[in-house]
Image (cartoon, rainbow over all chains, first blue to last red; front, side, top):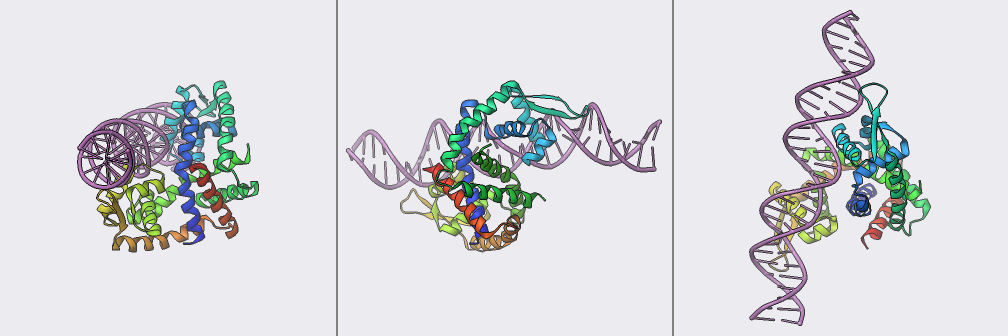
Length: 139
Length: 139
DNA sequence: GTATATAGTTAGCTAGGCTAACTAATATAA
DNA sequence: TTATATTAGTTAGCCTAGCTAACTATATAC
C-alpha cells in the first residue's frame, strides 16, 4: 500500500465518525452539518449568491436552493436582490449572526478534543495538505 | 478562527470534490465509492463478518446488508458461514481479488496527482493526524 | 428451560446530494 | 435592433448512502 493510498484510506475512514459527532453537536440548534456549512460560509466570507455557494461547496444549484430555503424558513438567513434582477444575495440575519457565534464557541471544545494530543504544527501541516489537494483536484 | 476550526473546515471542503472524482475513477468498474470501500477492506484485512464491516466503516448493519448483497450480485464477493450458524463471513471472489488489484493500480495516478507537490513527510504527518482524530472521536 | 444477547434481514425513512427541463433576466452578435 | 445564447434561480423527480424499528434465527447465561 502506497503512502498516498494510506492517506486517502484514513481520510475516508474519518468522515463518518466525524460527521456523526458533528451532527450530535449541532442537534441542539436543529441544524444539520450541511446547513451549518452554509451558515459558516456566509459568516466567514460575507453575503454571496446561490451560484457562489454552489461553487464554494462543490454542489449543484438545486441543492443550494433547498439548503438556503430551509435556512430562510428557520430565520437564520435572508435574501436580497443582487447586482441584477436575476441574482439573489444570501446573507445572515441578525439572529443567524448570533447563532453562528454561539455555535462556533460551542463546537470549539469538540474540535479541541478531536485533535487532542496533536501538535499545533502538525495540524497546520495537515490543513495545508488538505488545501493543496483541493487545489490539485479542482484545477 | 482557531487552527482547529480551520483544519475541520478544510477537511470538509475537500470531501465532495474528492468523492466526486473518486466516483469518476470508479465508473469504468461500475462501482460506487462506498462499495469500493468494502472491497478494499476485505482485500486489506481478509474475510470479515457483516458486523465487522459495519464497525470498521462506522455504519449500521442494514447498510452493510445492502452493500454486500450488491457486491455478491456483481460477483465480486461471496459469503460463507462463520464461527456459528448466525455469522456470515464475507470474502472476495477470485474475480473480486483481480478487480481490486486492477482498481488499486488504476487509482494510483489519481492519488499521486491529487497529492502532487506535497512532501512525503507531510503526507505521513497528515495521515497520522487523521488516524489520531479517529481514535479520539471513537474512544 | 427460560430470558437475554447477537447476527443478519426487511421495510420504510432521511440527508444530501444529482440531472433535466423550465422561467426570467441579461449579454452578445448579426 | 432584434434574434440567439448565456446566466441565476427553481421545480420535479431521481439516486446514493446512510438511518431506525421491528423482525427471525441462533447462541449464551442463569
